[in-house]
Length: 224
Image 1 (tube, rainbow, N blue to C red):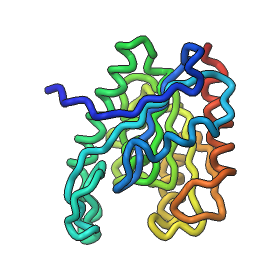
Image 2 (image 1 turned 90 degrees about the vertical axis):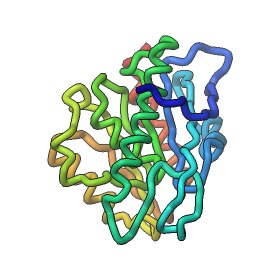
Image 3 (image 1 turned 30 degrees about the vertical axis):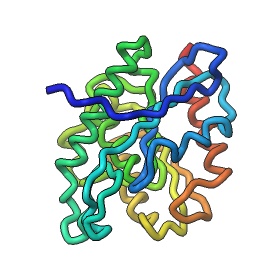
Image 4 (image 1 turned 90 degrees about the horizontal axis):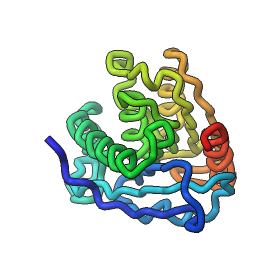
């Protein structure tokens, strides 16, 4: 049953040119679609890209005392897999956004799923399971939810998908060890992961912005 499309902020890196692809970029817990929009002009891109920043639904978040905020899924420290249903629901909403881009003329294999923290969980979840080939997955300060059962659901269409993972070595919100475990799970399944780590916390730094641009340029280099 079709879901209602998420509210999105949409930005072209170069409005004077036709974009060669789309980056669907999901924010972290409690943030919103405006969180990463300011980064677009900072990216030294070789080709014009369209950026879609969706707003997560509002929901009660257990780890924050049940406070209602924008969140892709609930986090309950006493039950690590409690967010399963929310994650699948949010991923389905991202599928709808992918389909909208395809309907507007952007092939799926020119669409990158990107996300920070909770948003990165959704990018990894759907990117590894999507039934049509995607351009890549950008996972910032994040992890794979339930990595032990990843093999049960991965899509062969994206068995060779480029993956960029970046994390702060001083991240107190999501310890880097959790991201390393996720990266290792991907590598054990023969995914090629570009891994970057930085002397920062749960944030984005200038060096990372440069590396993001470099990776996006690499992904879209063969797509004209």
